[in-house]
Length: 48
Image: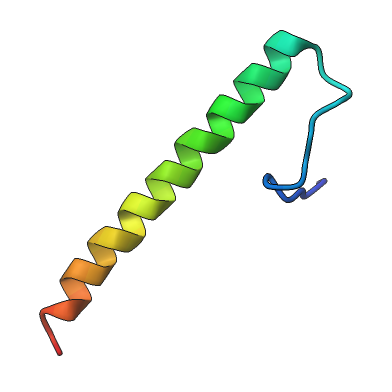
C-alpha cells in the first residue's frame, strides 16, 4: 500500500479529471475529520 501526504502530493501523473476527483475526495475526508475533532472537543470540554 502506498501512503502519501495529501498536502504535498500534486498528482502530476493523473489527468485533470482524475486529479480533481482525488482533490475533492481528500477535501471531503479532511473536512470530515475536522468536524469529528471539533465535535470531540465539545464532548470532552464538558468534563473539565
